[in-house]
Amino acid sequence: MKIKPSEFRVRPGRKVNLRKWPTRGARCYRSRRHYAQLLAAAVAELSRLQELLYADHRHALLLIFQGMDASGKDGAVKHVMSGVNPQGCAVTSFKTPSAEELAHDFLWRTVCRLPARGQIGIFNRSYYEEVLVVRVHPELLDRQGLPPGPRGRARIWKGRYRSIVELEKHLRRNGTRILKFHLHLSKGEQRRRFLTRIDEPAKNWKFSHADIEERRRWDDYRAAYEDCLAATSTEAAPWYVVPADDKLNARLIISRIICDELAGLGLAFPRMPGRQRAELRAARRTLTR
Image (cartoon, rainbow, N blue to C red):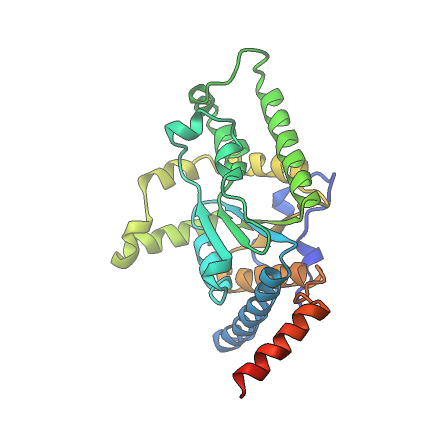
């Protein structure tokens, strides 16, 4: 199957019903061996494009991964970005905010980690936690030191959506491309993966009892994701809903979306001015004497 990124993109201004988005789509590979070949080709293409991004030095790329526990965020980052030069890439995983982070606005800790021009930045979770986890657990707002004033829940989320959209438009205007991936996992597949983490000793460390508590709020999280995707998928920073029940398929889809975005930037190696080319020729003559 040829991967068409547009099939996974959330159109701006559209309502989102995640029940209608598949968690397991048509397979892009015939076998695990074929998958390995396709992923290797995608990794090689991404490596070439990253070198161009670094040399071109006019754009940055920010990749945001969000999804329910066990949706495959870590694996997607590990496998898709396996061929990227570490000097041009940084991964940040955002956990529970620290006291210092809570003393700032909700975007501060992520803005500090934005990629520079020529770089790829990867957010494993992000500022979107503030309209997802915090929405499902509104008691967390009490720790955030919000100023007095109207505190209706709907007003808070609407204001945060607006802040996020404005930030992402600002970043786009200044050269940062943003791709946002929601790894769309079914409840049944999450159960299977949790059981694997429990049953296989080498994976026990990945499991927390808190995962079960969050699983009980599945419908609340789905509603939060639906509102978030609808409110914040824009032309400047689109959301892609990636079927995540098949981890291998998800990685191939993500890699294709990233490569297509970079390929569309018109990246090129810098052209040397005439004076610098003359200096290069002179240096070559010196080296070949």
